[in-house]
Image (tube, rainbow, N blue to C red; front, side):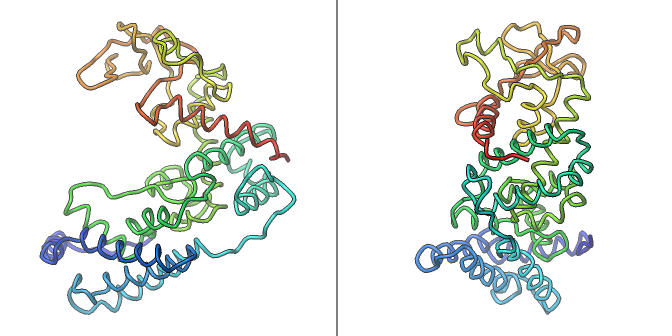
Length: 357
């Protein structure tokens, strides 16, 4: 996919122009605030709200507000085309399924499930899955992950706008160019999770979902989000199996001893639990875990130089010969922990008995 390329000197000049205008972030925030105000007071549908928001973004970006100097004909054309493509995420191009999968609250998600099941042989082949049983298990986990991430894709208008205005999808557009300029100015990566399954563009690419499913800027479509979650969990599950992690139920005797939990109410399969966790915390968590010289911590058996740092300033020595089969790490804190996340997804999956082949 093509990119808009400029020299380092041109980028520096553009950055100065942006800063002279009061910074790109303040401009985008201004347009966003105006859009949210109108959406909250006037607009009743997501599509109408996004249409208004798009006009605001285009107006600011194409030069009407002095943000970009010179003739912006090419930029205007690119943005107009990309906005139409982006709005396609919110157009109804699916057929309701009113007599199946009624334990799933979102009708668009029910339609996506129906489509995936009807094409399961093709999807199984692409995912490298051999059996219908494993296909069904992973499908339920993908649906449950969407349930955990965005309440089955039923987020509010404000949530949708808050996600989409900060990084409109599309790798070869002027908006992506502006994101690059913003990263250059701020020194921070400006990537955000989007769509019902909450994918970032980097993750979408790293799992080859641009080839398996479609372009990232269509991640707002439920069928694409569900396929993406399915393929990702499939890949991570196979990774866990290939690393010899096994299929025993997940355990964490350290957290039990500390009184933090009584047990882990996951899927009953440690490799599947780690694959689910990877959707939220990354595939680097898919490891065998070994005992350390500190009884309060286990660490990845393949820790570099046998040293693991469970928290800043604390380093422990890993005994790579003391693997703990079924061990599931207790990561995070507060409202989001690794154990809590997987238990929530597993609980939702167990409620999806209506999904059958």
